[in-house]
Amino acid sequence: MTNLSRFLLLPFIISVSLNALAEESDESPNFAFGLGYGLLNEKSLMNIDFKINIPLNDTFSTQVLLNSNYLLTGSSRDSFAQSEFTSNWFLKSEYVRLGLGVGVSELEPMDETLASEREVSGQFMGEVFIGDVAFTTNYVSADITLSNITSSRFGLGYYLNEDHRVSLFREKYNGNQIGWRLETYYQPKKYRQLGRVGLIVRTGKDYDYAGAMIEYYFDHARSLQQREREFH
Image 1 (cartoon, rainbow, N blue to C red):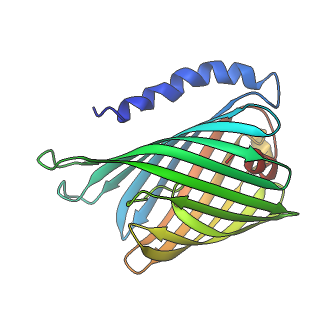
Image 2: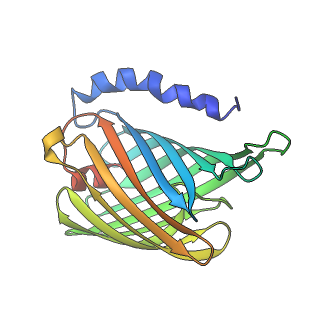
């Protein structure tokens, strides 16, 4: 087990206390757990995401994020696990949110004869909200970005209603390669607005991905639009 993958245990421990706190106030921390699966150039890519959002006051908040990706090709030579552990800090208002983050990314080949790679990465996030439109920019310094969440991109999203969003981004992946990302997320009211499902399509010169994502929040009911504007 790598040092970074040991962090997989941390969110489960913290979520127990956060779940109790979330029932008390809109300003309490919340915990989210996500699962994703898709095909990356016809090869299986799975991801597991843990996220802890901690509001500090009306203006500042912080976030702990752990993303784990598993590329399974049928051969240990080019299959690998990638983990990203990131701490993000946000300055926010009703119309704007700006964020800075620092994290550690580790790439571990399934072939034990190959060495693991690790790098420290920085991240900048910016969003502007105008009515039902959200303009988004995100820059990540890491060379390899397979995750559904952390990649360099800019674009816009539109809320068809308070619980359904469609977004289009121009995206940078794996160094300086450029592609496009189309995604849609829906949060049904049937389940107390505590879970959402998403469909993601990413395409580029050497990178084609299509997959689905489900995410569950350990807090209380709030619309998808409100949730995404309060928490990254």
